[in-house]
Image (cartoon, rainbow, N blue to C red; front, side, top):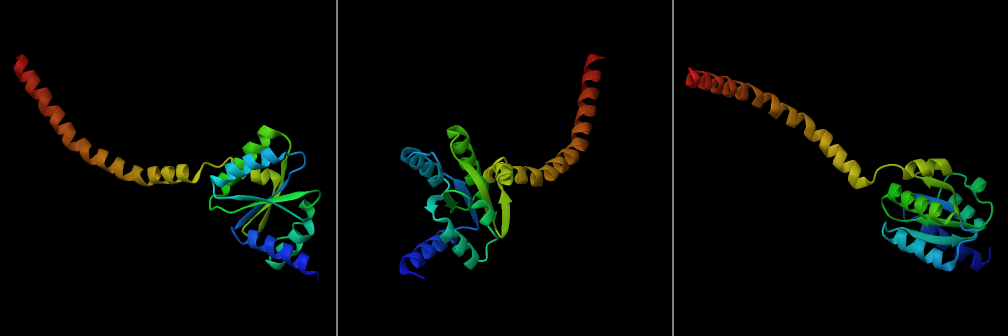
Length: 172
């Protein structure tokens, strides 16, 4: 194998090792300015957008033990990797592509599972990590709150009865 091809494959492997997911996209028709805009959006999630050769991606994915991505490698391909919030990255990519109506998500690999474009859209619809943490804390906090209300109800009931008795004695 030529040194040039080995370098390209090594570069793709380096990109693929940056995260436990990779989103494969078609970038036909997107301008340089739009790519810069997309990269700026992805930078907020610590993710990166890279144009790669299909053959290099195929070899690098096989070397790293990723699922078969051959079905998604028709036409020009770009990959999106990096960042810890795969749902946030999927949301940013989906919103950007929907607004531009030029490019599309081909597929994704999350862990060792191949996801379809529809799966990526479903992942994008998940709430953000911060929202899910807040929901979990709310669920964990709810039983304690209910217990305090129940424990507080008995003394509050006694106080209400005594106040009613005082009012009744005062009116008489």
